[in-house]
Length: 293
Image (cartoon, rainbow, N blue to C red; front, side, top):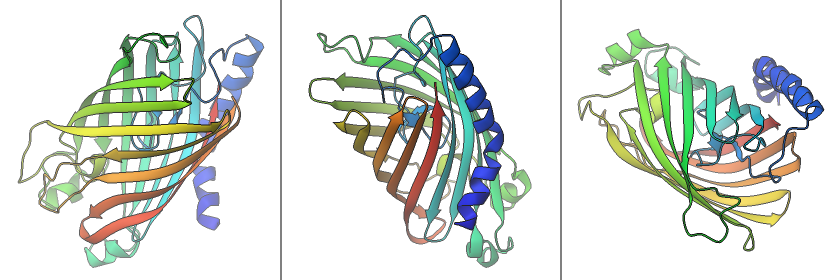
């Protein structure tokens, strides 16, 4: 409980900003989209699921409105802990701008690696997403999904350590395309995407390595079912490229997301991030609080 308290202290600034924006937005009549269609925030800041971005633009703003979200996430794994906080703004249901700050605590593994117990890798992620075709909510009579393209520029703060590990870059940029189809009558959302990246463990361990230094395509997908209008169940998967020869493998989760109002949501999940440096798969619990408008 103390660790969770630290995370939400760490997240106080973006959440406070989110509250201020939410108050201002409601006073101007914003938040026009359906409940839950704003999604939640990925650990990299984009709107979507926890692991994979959706084609939908974050927040509840329609084509004449501005929407957004602020979030705080913690992922407790067998041997590590990931904290991520950030915010995103959606402009006129067309363009999304996001920022996330991640801290990856190596706990006892840091000692085994000679870095010191609790050594923490940190990175900042600056993102943008643009809707280029379709509309997931209004195009119910068409097969065309909503399609968006996105970019995420990642800056890792641990360049000296990464260089000592033989990892050539502490900065990198991911490019992705994602398609989302919402079936309102069936209460189902399906999402599939392709990401071009050279990130190791989404950038926490830098970019590129002995097994390659070029952008490689990776798969991302989500499936969510609305049990009722304020409660969603779903699964996600995300493949990872093994640039540094440490047997990176597919990450996945199974989540429950609760949307008591348009202003707030809580997501909890069982997550399996595969192997991260040491042998064995890293499994644990994911929890994320989001404030939206």
